[in-house]
Image (cartoon, rainbow, N blue to C red; front, side):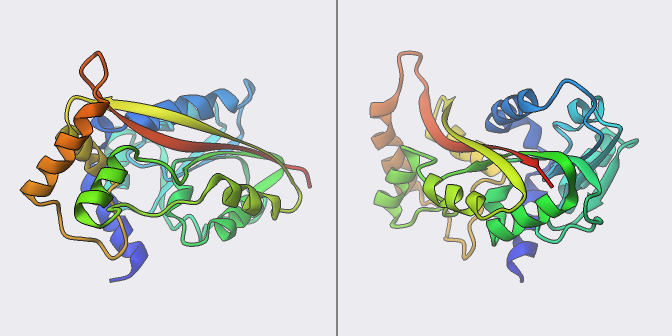
Length: 254
């Protein structure tokens, strides 16, 4: 089975419960939507639209909205929720659109799934009209702490995909031509009552996918991780999961 097909199927399985497990996506979406101008967004492409959680907010400001995702299950959920909108199944690294056909490209927490992020970014830039804009967020190395460190200690595996460092992302953005770019790193913390709830949410948003996947946690491993995490419990009785997120705002200048 191909890498991209595995990713598609993994996210399709997560589709039904996705909207109950997407606190990180909601926080990142709020930031990205605030970066967009108040005026009409024109033709708007939502890459990695999932089950359409941000589609209404974008569609209300767009002259024409298109939601794109590789996962069939995600698009089925989106179609059921918002049947009047336009949905396309495609790979974000192989966009089926003419050059300079989009005014606004929105991509919340999807770039980390690209095999070649720079190639994906170049495709996105090519798709956008002159003076058009891209707003995007992506997961960076250093995310999923402190959980990831304990998983590595007690299982010998990271159990999640590797991510770009912030300097690596900056280097790739600097290679884009004909654009002005700003990028900012933020730490976003999501809190959970238990380690099991934390792992359940990661599975619920598809974030536990890794190529060449490892076997699941044993009961003993889970107990050791849960015990170790207790030192991080806050005064409200919750456990933190820290994400390092890059927010990218790009304007095409030519």
